[in-house]
Image 1: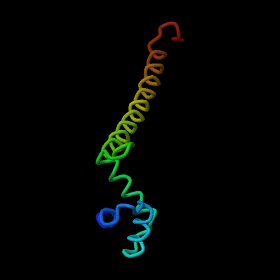
Image 2: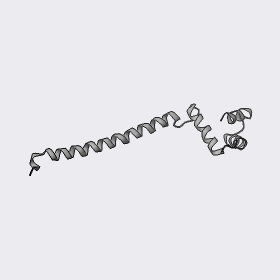
Image 3: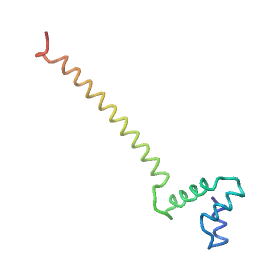
Image 4: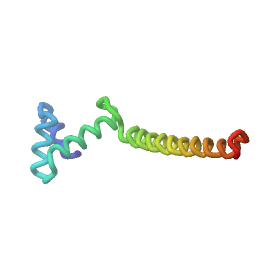
Amino acid sequence: MRLVAEARKEDPELSLNAAVDRIGQRTGVNADTLRSWCKQTAIDAGERPGTTTNDAQRIKGLEAEVRELKRANEILLAATSFFARELDPRLSW
């Protein structure tokens, strides 16, 4: 990513794609991978709009927490129904 930034600094008219292609060939890194890294770095630096790496990790963690809470809620609702039927005197035989 540093090499791409340096190449673009040396030649301001060089597009990101051209710089990525050139540096990717020289370093043996897939151009699409390098382009993705460069774009994400720009997003993290606030130079481009998008979801930052930290925000993406936080969102992923919150989604996992929501899934776990929903699962726990389903278990508690099932247990409540079970014990309510066990304790209901109208249903005793």
